[in-house]
Image 1 (cartoon, rainbow, N blue to C red):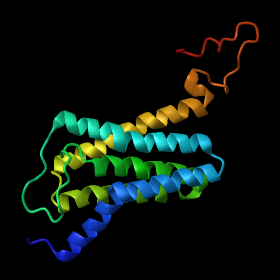
Image 2: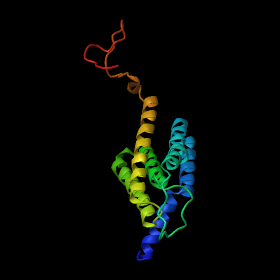
Image 3: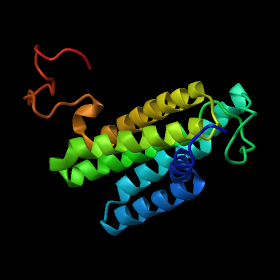
Image 4: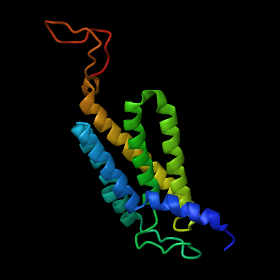
Length: 189
């Protein structure tokens, strides 16, 4: 009741951006753009990464933990899903992480600004869920953590298909023509 109305409306905007309407529009737009730029593999990776966090990982964990949402003082109608972890927060980290990564590949001179912007928007979306009182702070922090873990895992998947050294090869190292080994200085697989 004591929250300023401007804070509530600003939180509503960020909450909408991290919700299913904002997610669907941004995801579809990104995939269409990648296909149009003839980057079908990146489009498939982005679609799998985004769908995985929004449609599989977070909903499954919500069912496992079965934590109720805050029950008093919400500025918006409470969703029917469970509270822990925050889907808006996990999805925001993944969505804006994917956008920052792909954008940084196109505009490498702006990498820091892109990642800083992604972090800011993800934090604002998570904070909006607490301000609107539809999540506990721990829900949002768990959502951020989950989003980071999922994004890191999917970056490993993406890296393993794009870079030969991710398969145990380092093409920068000389190979012996007769044995195919990497020489004695190379440790590991």
